[in-house]
Image (cartoon, rainbow, N blue to C red):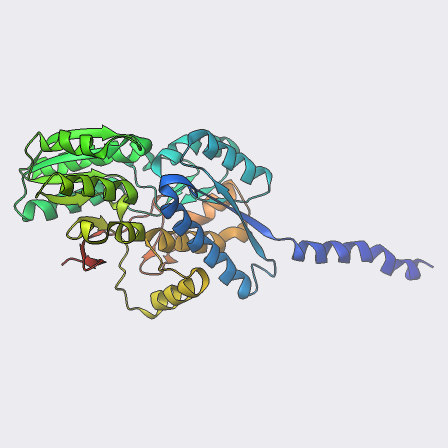
Length: 364
């Protein structure tokens, strides 16, 4: 009789094993998918989603599918915190995002409290670097972008800069203003005027305040849409000054919305659209097939961040997952390999680009 019962005793265990194999491993994505920063959020979500879909096409992780749960932070602090709570309660092991520095500052206490590992593809504010926390960063810091930009602009003979910066993402834009001013001054230039603004203000008034300082350079620390509007306002006022922008604006929306108006604008970035490596070309083709558009810097960074997370996801969650990412492993990104330092910050090189004939062209 005991022998006959044995299969019945084993059956629940077998069913549990099958159920576990079919249960998806859950990742979260948090980004601005509505409003004025949606171009960045959409690109980041698409890059993360493609990485998850490719993982599942290859058999998943240890035979289990991966599910990407998506939350919109609306570029709003309360919405970002609600998004983190929603993702956590839904079972996300870790989160890709957020994509702007202000949202990173907003959710940092919450993710630390819950030990929810959060890997941002595009946050660059130095306020969030060098911290032993649960927010890990894939992009280079503002300080590196500003140093690169200041050197390029100074070499062009520009000495008097006036900066407009968006208070809607002030953790990033005020950091940009601070580091650009420092780097430009070290080379002999100076920031002679500045104007803060919020979305919806008169762009003409903002530009007018900058032009009153008689600069030879206009610098915009803003998203792509606001950078286009500011540039249009400057040209409408007859401004002939050189224009440069922060790396935040380097999305495909700048080209699509700006057209001829943004020709000649220079920006630093860590994404090379002219990369001809087989790895990147395969990704770009898959991205175009899936989303019917070109990938941007947030797409590539989010894909890299997601692949890094997927490579260690089976190790657990919380502290164990953080330890796995900090173990010194180099992760193969689409355009460059990277690893995390003891604070969870990855360093990447930046380069200058200029808008020419409707494209971002990498400068020597």
